[in-house]
Length: 119
Image 1 (cartoon, helix red, strand yellow):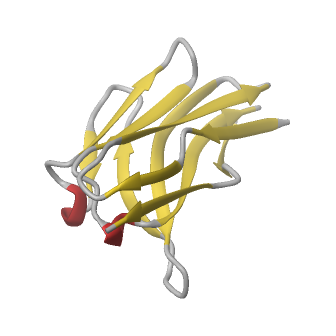
Image 2: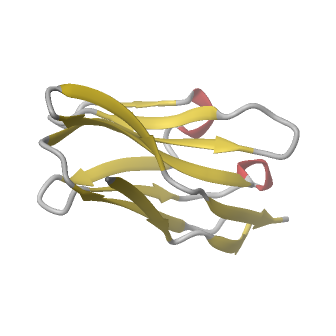
């Protein structure tokens, strides 16, 4: 089985910073794209940032210049550094990974971590 375990969410004031992490564990061959999504109450889950296995990144327009996604392939971990946080960044943040197991690619999700930005 494969698990994605997130950590690092919390409460921060507007203008502050947080870093969330997501570590993959279990039996698998490799990890392709990893990403972070977020879902605010009453809204759909949207992509925040993604990173390929060779380090290419993409970001939602709303977080460009403020958030940075990175990964450590030796630790099977993806990070999201969030700076200059705004109240509208408040959401549950979910980690996502495309993981190769037994010749196929499977899509896995973490359990989510709450990020709350107070004004």
